[in-house]
Amino acid sequence: GQFTLLVIGGDVPADAGSFDVPVHVDHIADPTDDLKARYLGDAAHAVYLIRPDQHVVARWSHFEAAKVKSALRRALGQE
Image 1 (tube, rainbow, N blue to C red):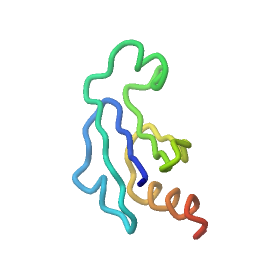
Image 2: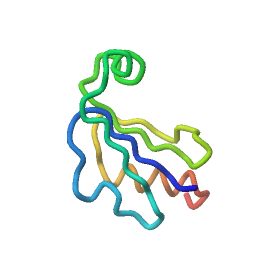
Image 3: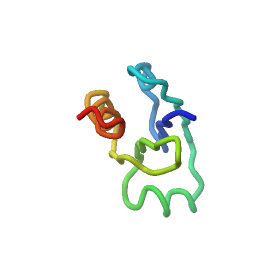
Image 4: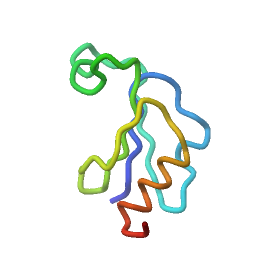
């Protein structure tokens, strides 16, 4: 029932879940080879913003709070 910020590989910044709406942070620190192939490609890590209905809103190579906030506003029809 809330947005999810999926972090695959890399570290999770302290402010990763600090937004105007509830955002669950899920971190896969050590992804399997299958997960790497499917969700990372050649990248070392990735960050996905996922709507409550499982639709992927956006994907980034690393976490940037401003970009996540903007994507949340677009997904909520505020931008």
